[in-house]
Length: 193
Image 1 (tube, helix red, strand yellow):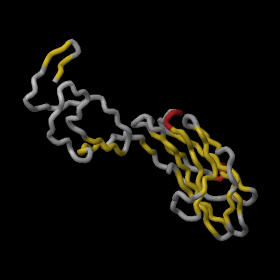
Image 2 (tube, rainbow, N blue to C red; image 1 turned 180 degrees about the vertical axis):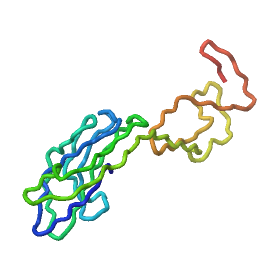
Image 3 (cartoon, rainbow, N blue to C red; image 1 turned 30 degrees about the vertical axis):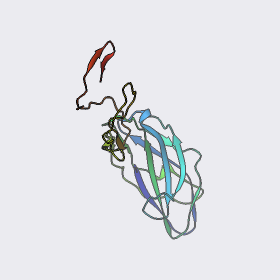
């Protein structure tokens, strides 16, 4: 969530038909894939709350007018809540920031009504690099001792699993320690065990 504010309606129902905001920060266009305007009947944003508009590839900091805005009725004597959210790209630059300046009544469009009130700017959100969490474990029952026929290829000596969470990981190398009574024979391609 980049910014949130409430809209208290009195006298008669009001229909919100448009919204713009001003983004700021050090982010570049590729850091943000979507800006969204969301509506909730309470002060908590959850998955069931309506998305009023999605601004795809919104570009660099500046004024953003939400396109294809879905009108939202706010009943008289109730309060509606608007949340401006962002989808952050997986490769967003660590250390860059984004925030939304104070939203003014001039940036809200209603089908009718008199607008008043103010908001404050949303706090700067800083992109951080996500480090993968990698857990090494046995891949089921470990390989047991056995006799192996001479000339056998691709005989499994050990097996393990790598469970990766939080972010993608790339395995770039591996080392292992072997033991036993085998003899190493050098070849043009390396060593044969």
